[in-house]
Image 1 (cartoon, rainbow, N blue to C red):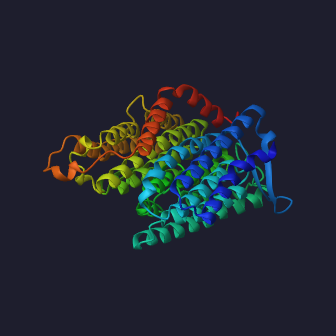
Image 2: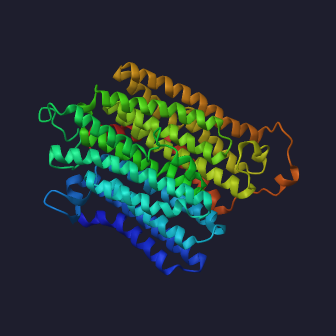
Image 3: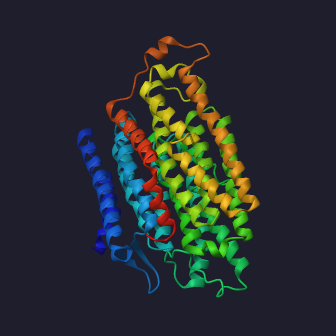
Length: 495
């Protein structure tokens, strides 16, 4: 039973390595192998989660490698693991189906999908890690295995984006390691513990040093979550193929950063230790600034994928802001937004990729009248936009409401400033997304009719993926009560 946790991690990594080594020439063979590997991995994730839910986390702990008496590379599932990995396991097959059609004209598909599969296993490793050392190992590995995906086209822009991504990610991880070292020194262990590892009485007199160590780790992990001023790599990484952008912004890299911050606050330093300190104030202020900055930059950016990238910068800090409230309600709001934002953002990027691939147009001002030629794509884009804006009853309405409610419950002036930032960001989100929709459906400029006639809907695989993302996103919002109750149990440490 303990070895079951190895399968969702090692199986896709081995399949990805096989694809890199064998490099099958037939697209059909490769696609069947790819989809089978991805779907089996998702099934394995589901089995691990269900077994853990029935038997309890202690029944499914797996030690992969022993480094010393105190340090090991270990896997274990708890409540937040279930949430994060469920998001990954559901969305990865859908975006893989989309990617198989999208990448059919990009070249070097075996290399691309080899690293794609390896990334799936590494993200599962992050989700299932038992302690900070294990999570840090997979966290660093994620940077290395997603780098070839970001640099896939290998032109000057892709190489520049790859170098920037590597420098930012490795530098951030180095800062995060400082916090882990301090935790290890104070506690003698780095196992995730709900409520935190630090004993306030035992660390008396060293509080300020530990708060500085926390901030180093917060901003270090926050690099992948694109917190200002360490966000620049994310918009530049939009030069990658759109399936990669969808993964970066919705499932894998940026969510891994937010997940690491969640572990740092609630399972490492402890919310009770940090609440009311200057460290909380600095972290919360940085998240609030990022919320407004990301939305404002999105509104000013005409390039469609970069606009969505700055939108991600803003929305990831919704999660960080909620986490820095350092209350169970804040943790619930963060998990809720992590879930709904994943469905919404992956759908928006998938639509952007379809638009760019089918029309060759990458800028918002080029989309006049495009809604008539790509009705399905813009229908999905419109539904996802409404969800991201927070139109009830779609998912992000619930998550934004819960984050604001948690901020009111905290009652600090800075938390109320965060609510103001959420309201302003929602207004800006409405403007930068509705601009795209209005241009597509209600053109005001001159339209090149002949050019539009050459634009057609994407193929069946991309259409099925877009529809599935929309249906699942809307369904999860309409039946949100059991989901939110489950997330509240996770936040309370009952799972």
